[in-house]
Length: 89
Length: 275
Image (cartoon, rainbow over all chains, first blue to last red; front, side, top):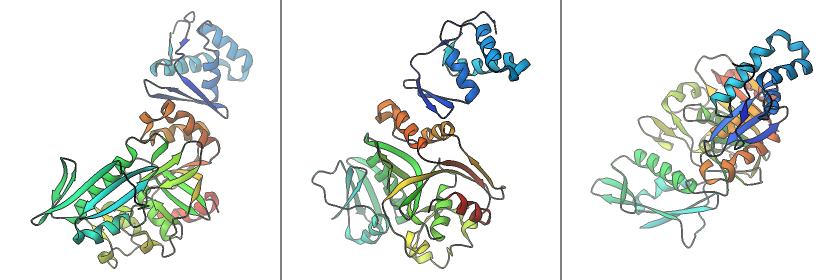
């Protein structure tokens, strides 16, 4: 995944925050996406302006304990979002 | 012709039938609300043609044959379909339900998940059996409205239930087809009571003969996802019922249960079940 690419969320998704996790629901595609706590944070950072690199950087500064795995975790999560049509990159 | 009204979740239908199958109709619908309504949404008609029984909805023939058990299966399926199909007043869930002391347990799941077998066992353990197939929860409520049909135990569930219900002994009091036995709830629990109950627990069951016990407390998001998968009238609901599903799981503990025999369940159930 190109670090300079920008994930753009599909605004049609309805969001329900349940404790620290999220469910995203698309009313016309009838798609539901479950997000654990980490994925929820990544989703919130996808504002259509930040690049993949900036999202990784923000996660690293907020969650330094995640360390070396951050890049692959963020990219895997973004790919899941993309596979469900929740973002375009 | 006799007429039986069936009311569920604010919808009504009527069944016209010949007097000689009154026993069958009573067997199937004795626990459903039968208040007379002026204009039921749908009328299903059963007639006799020689030795065969014919079920129709208008001009459409839904069943023709000699077996009352097969007619019963089709009739119940059609009844539920017509009562739920256009309902937009709340969530219709593919789920079993039981209660104890006014607190309800809802077991959502697709066909084959074991919700009938589990609800039949729970009834034999003293829980009030409400339904093994459809639960309706009105918008902004948490009261269970259950479609109270006799549990339809599939033949593969007989072995698991063998120690708790003597199928052969009660053969004359059940309706049996090749694949299914319909059992009156009061044979399972003589004190069965169709009490009003609120949702106190969602339990998503999965029965696999011989499987080890696995009980997982679901996060609210995982429970919401699982509940949406059991929602059968989503297309009729505002936002496909998503907000309502989220509302219910916010206030209700939810578990996923995988089990292989009822012996495993007793202790765990006492820990998680309400009341």
